[in-house]
Length: 502
Image (cartoon, rainbow, N blue to C red; front, side, top):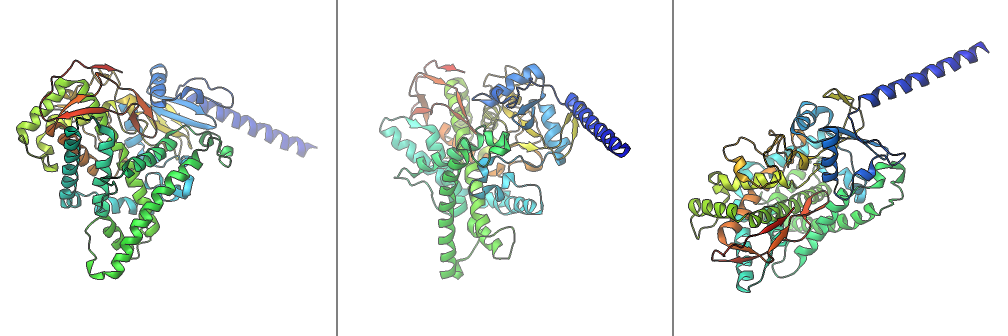
């Protein structure tokens, strides 16, 4: 009996201790809205989580906690807090929470942006940085990208001759798609005559939309088996299309290499990766090559084309800024000459326009989610082990304590400024920062300068309608809710006074 009482006392002490620890930990969590039973703060997310969370941060501060179903989520919304997560404590926050949508086609086992930090992940990053996105490699194939931009300008000229408006986002996507596919495969994925670019854009956006959609299976793990919103099912359809496409391209290349062994070279990224795989590299085989291409195209096409579309929307809403950009390009490039990648360093105002576009319209507004590997103290609060961490880059870019007139498009704020997008200026982190920074940043920036600079320099532009709505639609990436359509011309139009609805 005494022994039973002793065990009972131990049990009471243990329960009391656990309750105390839970109380202490919960009291040290960052502030946040009071959660509802079971669902927590899920209703707080709304249809546009980047805006809902930015609004909440004004009440609860730059670091706050929410309970999303069963998942503790920490949201940071200032440059200083982002630095704590992405640099100071990067070693504890480098892994990801993996959305259930990425388990479609078992893509979570291959997806580079979501792989856990490991020897394999480091090797894949090294391959990307050394063989795909190094300055030497990109300089070596820049003529291919120049050719694709020439084709874009020819397409715009044809549209102009018909007196039609151009869908800026679609044209930018098609060009970005071919810029990437030419660099990687030495071929165009977007048929110049057919409509497969639209189909591929729908597939890529479908993946981004499903990954970005709040998923009950992510917040209540016991729901993963039933996929209540059908998100994994739809993701499977989209991912399977890309996987099949890239497998076909890889198989054709392998067959060609077997038939023509003397032709093997490092002419493009595909040959480079196949050569690496044939050196018995465990981290790069046929399957992993195909899945890496899925990541590159999903991450690199829609984000780049969306940024071009946002930039053109802002320029058409601010004709005086567009005029300054054209004047700089005319002076540096010369009328009638084509913009080249090598011209970028001589175009500070164009660089400022790109930075200002990233500030107001970051391609991935909440970056990619991270996961705490240990309890970490930040600013007197505890980020508990296992918590999901979201960095609201959209809110940071509109922080009134950091930016003057934060909702206004003013590229001049970056002239003479050391703020850059390469992960060291936490006021502007569209590509993330730390060891998880996007490896494709060098190629993305080259494509952005080349496409946007060419569109501005080669044509005058006028909106198809008299006003433009700068509303967005949320997925993993941020896009204009209504496609931007503009009329190109070879002569400066009489700019109308444009009204912009925010």
